[in-house]
Length: 141
Image (cartoon, rainbow, N blue to C red):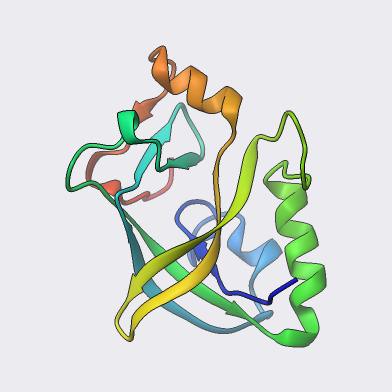
């Protein structure tokens, strides 16, 4: 597995509730980043990122941070994040899916892992059970 950085946009951002447990002390760097052609949706305490064309309006951008994890901590950090996000490789009922995207940073474009909404959540968004996060920037919930 490639040790890509992570694009975090919700409860894993610095200052949010899951940052201390899953990322604090394990990172080399954390920088502002954004993901064009993406939107955040929520129904409460945490957001879901989607890139599904019918759920993303022209100009939508998701804002967050790109987080580089120390190499010797990488395997334990990704295992913890996968568990938090309800992600299992090739899982049929994942809460989130972990995919590779290209994010925009102050230093240019960079590939990163991101957790996006799983299929059930996408269906819930389509029927109006979640609402779009205005401006694409999660500030707690």
